[in-house]
Picture 1 (cartoon, one colour):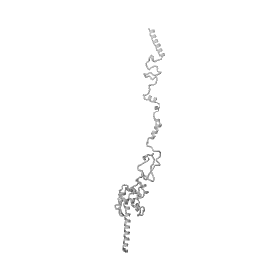
Picture 2 (tube, rainbow, N blue to C red):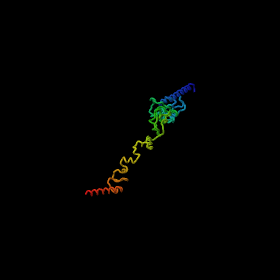
Picture 3 (cartoon, rainbow, N blue to C red):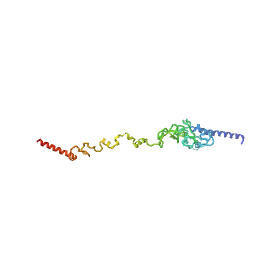
Picture 4 (cartoon, helix red, strand yellow):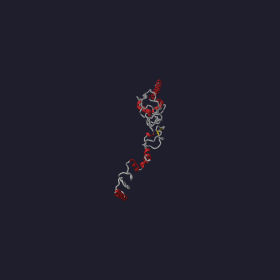
Length: 261
């Protein structure tokens, strides 16, 4: 091989290397927020080249239309994968939760995380993603009493790792909001507001007319113990003194008639 041929080979090698580098670099433009990480979105070395990270390997295995150095990224083929296994899909990490982003579109308006790094995930972007309970002020409509098991009312908040902070949900979990009333019933405190007559069944029955027979000497037909009569004088109902009184009156009346003749 002469010097001219060697020079051509060297030039071709540089051209091929440049073409390969350019082809790999433009892939970041075929991924939402790819420009936020440049080559670091696919490679362990953020400067590009060398070992692929989990996301880059997923693209190489499943997301290229042609599986070589010139292949384009098919975002829709890998967006719902969780390449780095951190519990968030690639789409959630790059802010395209519904896989609607297309090449040339504006990047989603979120702070992305790298889908190739397990320790980098989108907690803190103000959107509840993946396994998050909450994110910042976003609690998903939950409160202390909505949790399982439910906790007493109080201000629910979100931890830095996007899990619920229940430290201000005071007291012990309860399942019945009427426990206060139930407690009053068992202690009888509610009875203090009721009629005082109810504490004496005889008085209550006397008030409503459904109680025992009237008291002695009430004037009703039925004779009671200790009553002389029930309104109609009967000899056998009185004492011996009553019978004697009747006989004396009878004699007096009879004598008067006799003397009157």
